[in-house]
Each structure stands twice: as C-alpha cells, then as structure tokens.
Image (cartoon, rainbow, N blue to C red; front, side, top):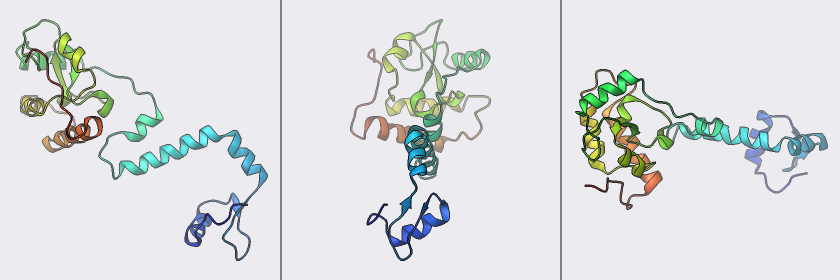
Length: 193
C-alpha cells in the first residue's frame, strides 16, 4: 500500500491512465498487487528506459537540444557526406582548411557544431578541416567568428539540407555553447592563429 504521498488531484488522473492498482474507497492511498510489484522488479531496466524515453520525447517540445530521444534510444553512427558534396565544399574553401586557412590536399569532414550535439551530418554544418585542426577541435564548439564564417559559406552551397535557415544554425550554436561550455568559457580556436 502506498499512502500519504499522492495528492487527491493526482490520484484522480492516475486512475484514467492505467489500472495496475486499486484505490480503497475514500482513501488517498493505492494498493498494488504482488504480481504487479514482481513484474516491475523483474522488468525494472526496461520500464526505466521506457519512462526516460517518454520523458525525453516530451521535453523535446520545450528544449532546443536536438534529438534527445534518439540519443537515448539508439547508438547513432556518425556518417559522412558523399564525396561529390564534400569535394564541392573543399572547392568553395579553395582547398584550404576552414579554421587555420592552410592549404592542403587531404581534409577531414568536420562538424562546426559538434556531432555529439547535433547527431547529424548535413552539408550546412560540415567544413573541410586539416588534420591538426580536426584533431585539436574534437567535440568543442569553435569561436563565434567560425559560426559567422560558415553562415557566409553556406550562401555558396548549391543545395542546403531541408529545414536549414540562418536562424536555426545560430540557435543550434547558441544552445550548444550554453549546454557544452557555459556562457563564460573560452571557445576553441586553432593554435596557429
């Protein structure tokens, strides 16, 4: 029996949602059968995961962090842009690293807003980066001047990912900055600059 922890207005709503307990007449307590308690104990991990997923889906409606429920639900594999799309990005950058500006022949597909935050590989967030910059940046957010630079670069892309807008990119950047770094922390810049 669970008592003194449930407010009457909550109890009324619970009765409409599920029938895994009973309420003694005129009481603010509930009785859960032993079979249900045993089921909950045996399936605790699954039930907790389902509850967390449901809460995450609900929070996505209020929280600007993308893909909360997908991050909880599955292991997302990092993908790459198709070679012709990435080659066009390298061409727009004049075969130079997006961050340090050094010329090169081989570049990494670098997520300006870290992949661990957006969990997607889309042309509006990918730049060509030299190995030293790509390695040192890792999952950091770059200084704001690189947001401005990629927003300008994106005007040169022939086709942008569906749903892209300058405002969306600025919002993702700001949310990542707050959640990953805080407002006061210095953001990443290449060491050669």
